Figure 1 (tube, rainbow, N blue to C red):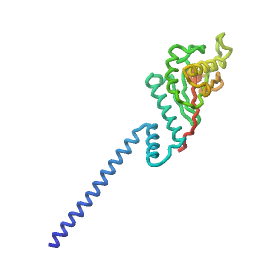
Figure 2: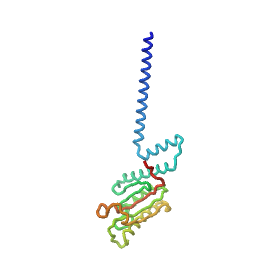
Figure 3: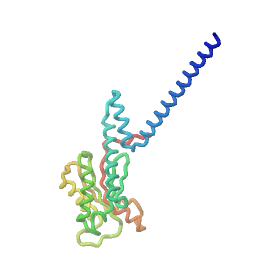
Figure 4: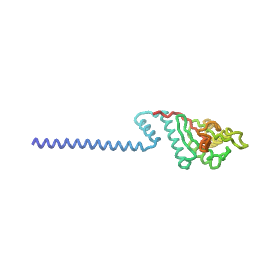
Length: 222
């Protein structure tokens, strides 16, 4: 009788052990899927997920968290706009600790030697303007050229041309409803190159319009 009882007890204990291992395995698989789901989010959603979880569990959403989240959203909107309009060869988005920079080829907006926005250029500026609405950060529009001397009676130098191009972009944003209090324009001519002016490709990179959204928070260093 005792032998039967012992065998019965061992069977129960073995069953409990298997159930425990099975339960742990199921929990592990579930947590793995949750982790993969989170990692499949893009960077913006990843940040928002943990911010929201922090708030739900009694934490407070800090101004820094809100600003960083807004930065991610702005970058994502610019990237989606570029992809949708197929402008990846003419517009770039760069981000550093100080600003979000939208770099635009001047041929997208202007004819050679001109500071008057082309009709097609207005469509591009309209898309950028819509994304910037609601942004209260300072915005600096910069004009840049290559080092080849300009040949036009409208401008004395590349410096003049770069400034008037920046002003044309700024004026569009203000007319479109943006506050002039946060916008400013600067022209640098050929004096702030990002590449060598000795090559065609280098000069092409140096000719640019930059729209700089000054960040109100810094990217945390890892």
